[in-house]
Every structure is written in C-alpha cells, then in structure tokens.
Amino acid sequence: MDRLDVGFKVLHAINPQPVYASGSGYGLSGPDRDNLAMDLTIQAVSGLISVTGFADMARFNDGRHETEMQRPFRA
Image 1 (cartoon, rainbow, N blue to C red):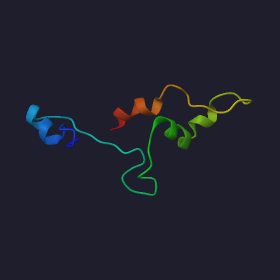
Image 2: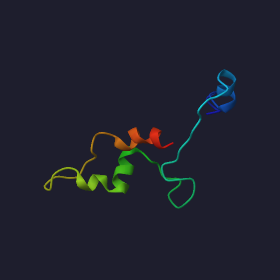
Image 3: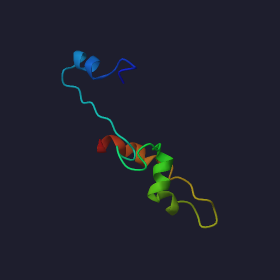
Image 4: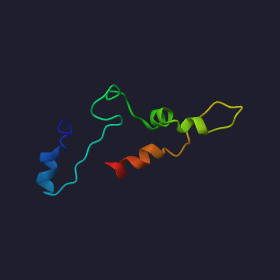
C-alpha cells in the first residue's frame, strides 16, 4: 500500500482514525501461506464445488462469489 501512496502514514494524515486491515487467504504461516486465495480456489479447497452442479455434469463454482463477499466481514 505504501508503494501506491495509500499506506498507513498517508491515510493517517488524512484521517487520524482509519480502519486499516489486511488478510491472507491461507494464514500467515503454514505450508499454504504463499498460495493464491481467489474465490474459485477457496470453493475448491473447502469442498463447496463438490456439492454444486448435477450428477451427470462437471462440477462448477456456485456463482455467487460467496467467499469474496464474506471476507470483509471476517477481517
């Protein structure tokens, strides 16, 4: 964020009480910490994709991007 000129110091100068949070899809430590965490990968890893679609078709994501919509509420 500092590289984009919207780091904590810049935001604090504008508003001394900013809410500043960051998140990691797989946590800050552990074997998966460097993996990308996009909605589709989280649905696959969590098993959500396994319960979508029809028996005679390939599985697909649920289309609602639920994991991306929930992230701000869990920061």
